[in-house]
Each structure stands twice: as structure tokens, then as C-alpha cells.
Length: 96
Image 1 (tube, rainbow, N blue to C red):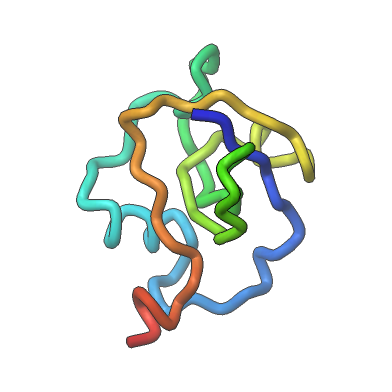
Image 2 (image 1 turned 180 degrees about the vertical axis):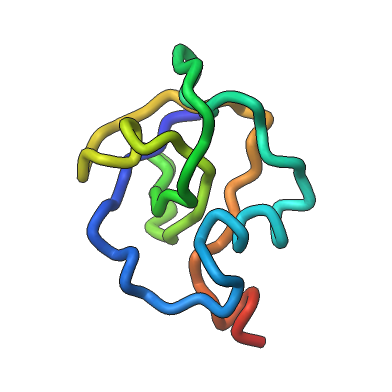
């Protein structure tokens, strides 16, 4: 699956403690050993804000990424199809 990093919005509030914890809580998945970017072997360190590429869906999502892959706004990434996208809209998740 292709996503684009929408860096620069980490100031948005989440009651989970961090965006990575937000992803863990609402994905129903265990944190992966490696960054889900398909060629990366770094450990995921942050819950990154992303949008799906070429889908017509403009929603913001959270996925676990290493710091290097989270660091570039607009960067398009191939991530594993096994990693669930979790809504970054807190009114749908932890803000309920």
C-alpha cells in the first residue's frame, strides 16, 4: 500500500499518550518488529500521520514508522499491506 507522510501535525492532541500508543490501541495489532516500510529494518518509533496515495480518500491515518521514514513531509512510502491504518480523527477514536 502506498501512503504519503503528512509530517508537521504531531501537535494535534491525542489522549492515548502518544500517536504510537494510539495506533497500538486502535489497530488491534501488536507493534511490528520492523518499520512497515517494505525495505526498512529499523524499529518503529513513532505513530506517523499519513494519507493513502491515489485512493480519493483524504482522511488522515496513523501507522507506526521509524524516525527516518517519518521525517520527510510528502514522502511517498510503500508499506506492508498487513499494517492497519488507524484513523487520526480523535472524535472517531480516543476522543469518544
